[in-house]
Length: 248
Image (cartoon, rainbow, N blue to C red; front, side, top):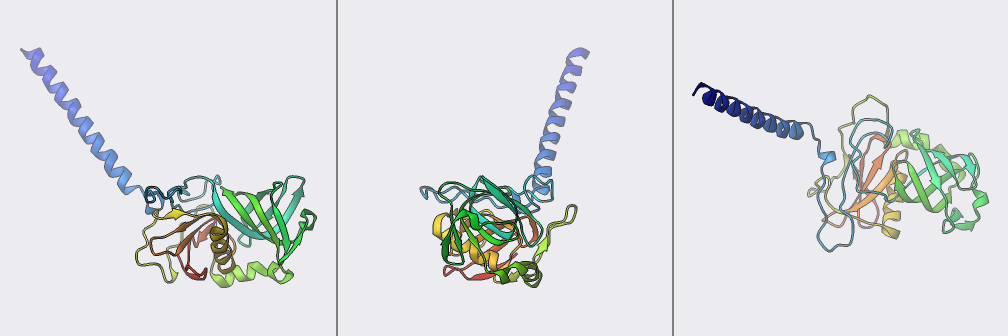
């Protein structure tokens, strides 16, 4: 009799611990998660991957924030060319982010609007790179050598209020301009091609310094350009006619 009661008491205690432990896990996961780590699927049948938003420093850097993402997507970066090799080059953005650019046989090159060869990409040149971004590596589809005056992107970055990424510092919590009223972080449909390129160019012109790792079309038709490698802004909002309207 005593043994039977003891067994029942032990079993009840284990069940109570399991329930308490499960509840704690749910609370911890909820309180410890940020909106930046949450994502929701795009509408079924859209043919595009769901957008998953993230924030923080550069991927693979160990910096703050989740940098959650759905995989390589259309994006780009602008900055100054560093080392050049047969397979590509490196660049440093105005905010100090290091980017690796991989070139391919299909990569096109231009200086301003004039087509040029890959030999135009030399150390010290200011460039805009568009292509497929995976972390801080871009497989380039187009490389544009920008006018000499654009080398002063650091000044533009400061004027735009871009905050470079610094390990151990918290993400900035501020907004500029207009944020779509219906915007919910993590929603939308990833876009590519000319649409993504135009939105990326607009965002980098207004807020140079980061690396665009995807462009998402929102329910109102506008675009959210997702920025990594900086502490602010992580989200740049671009209108349907590719004008920057806000950032956070």
